[in-house]
Length: 109
Length: 114
Image (cartoon, rainbow over all chains, first blue to last red; front, side):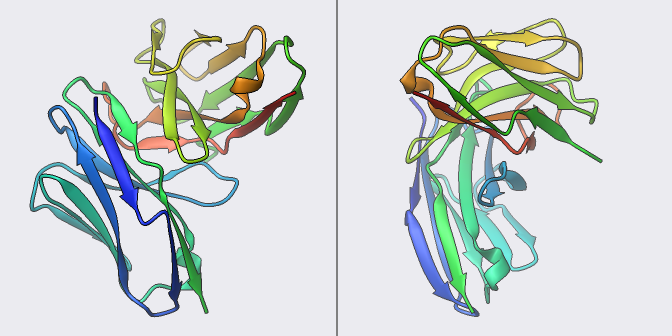
């Protein structure tokens, strides 16, 4: 059974204080790892897809990286508008998606 | 561009009542999905439709039925609601044909079953 574990469950940062969110996974044949952002009362919004170990993707203050066992979402100099829940998901060889429980990020001005 | 539209946004049911959650997408996507989101459990797939005319069970299908009405619309029905079905329900569609990659989600339906 595929498993996705995200840590920490919640993270409080001061504006400008860089940090990383972790997504550890076990999957039967990784077809892709995805990061989504979810604002309160909204549906998840797609951020990145990573397909193989060593791959990196960037978007504004966010950078996602992938190894064979985990992915990191690095947030550089975060702003209050980066506050959200960040979800990680893996797609397996059978094209089934498994989501983690998410990390709730709060950035204070 | 509306994307994925879900109705209603909120609903309260009594145990045993039935209801249908509606979902429509205007992005011409083939694949559509219904998820439920519960605290600490992540999103879990209820049913999906890879293309118009097909539907398949996901991880937690018991107590639910779906209908892919046409390419745009995919509805989720609770025939006899139970308190365990209290959750937030999300409809999604996939931008990548034949896969569940790059999902576009609706804004959700918060359902309470008393």
